[in-house]
Length: 89
Image (cartoon, rainbow, N blue to C red; front, side, top):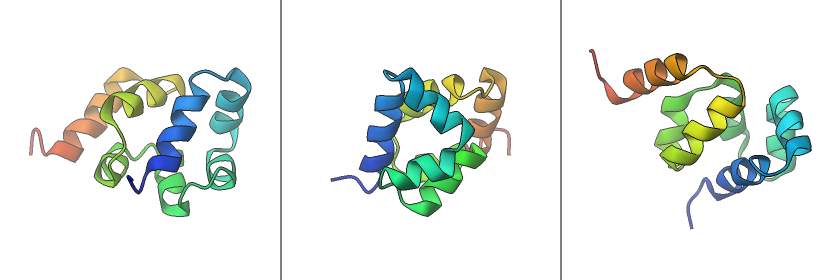
């Protein structure tokens, strides 16, 4: 089982539960940790650290959709993804 399973499960559920999604946007670290997510992964989520989340093994499509829903612009996501992949270095 993936070490990021709890985070992926949380992101998946938040896509279907508006109240959970709102709580996750407002208090990402607290909500994620309460759902069993590793504190380092929860902090990466709160910071929008796409690179760290991908390194943890979070499903790329789920991560993309979730970060957009949490308010990150597509441009910012792609810029962070570019830094994570080394594109443009």
